[in-house]
Image (cartoon, rainbow, N blue to C red; front, side, top):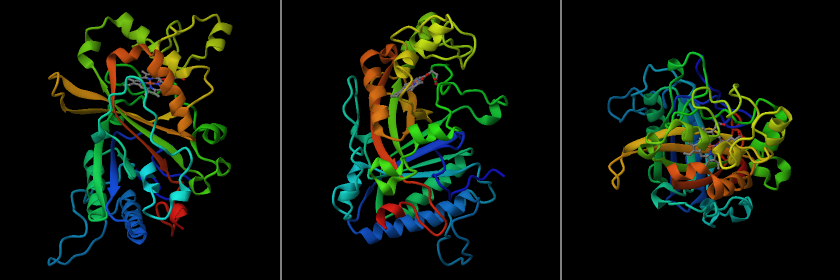
Length: 367
Ligand code: HEM
């Protein structure tokens, strides 16, 4: 079947192999009544559970009321549809009596050198990441979340992303970003329990019991200056990433998955990667890992340059925001890639632990 379970220990959409499409929507809450918010989370739970199972929101048959479901996904399968919900720092500003429940680490990300952030792509009280293999099914899900939320929440921003479809790459190789390089190679192996525990999911002892089995999501809208890149010689492009474009292998290796850890390369007699290459700087000593689950975006024309406004809808999950901050601080200071990219949006969310049958999204926080 092409359904992903909605209920489980963790929310779907984190460990789920990346689907073809993503749409991430941040909401601001328009009520200060906790019961209204909780009621919405319950209605969203019902909606998401049904849609993930390939069912419509409802199937009222009366011709004399607006249909319960909007209909554009009728007859379509779920296409691995997943929903991942989280809350931003602003949810804890006192409106809902949960100020004391804010995880210490959940605060707006620090400003990094070279940031050129636009408010319109930043922040949010709540977020949902919707992923699926069919663009129409993903749209239908977002549309109905918004519809059900009307009056209680308003959309703050909405960003869509794509990658090569799985159908177009039967080999299931690492997808390429818009600079033509394989992107995702160096992700931690989250099939390992220890890796999930150390790097990905919040643990009870982290100090915020309600966030157990949750994860922090960082969203960065990063514009990629395609025209500058496209005039850059291949050798320099490869130096910038520290990897070969064709194979994705670290420079000096032939295997895409060869280690990039300096000590390991040295032990094997392999050349070190250029110190300012994106891979070397992001990797550091290899002790701090994040799970990148990014997609490409394209969004019309950049008004200032007349070029395509396109880039990376960077999404990463981590047990603590510290992991992202540490890596991004290094990148902002040293990454050769900085010449070709600009960070335009930023948001951070604490994504809830998994939802159990009979429970609702965020119930551990509001219980
Ligand atoms: C690795 C692209 C931004 C963190 C890579 C690789 C590419 C890439 C091609 C090498 C292949 C791989 O391991 O996936 C990009 C592009 C970016 C971008 C085009 C911006 C438009 C970021 C940001 C972060 C980040 C903002 C986090 C702060 C990493 C990490 C690795 C990596 C952790 C793996 C390093 C390792 O091998 O351990 N990126 N990246 N990247 N990137 Fe990025």
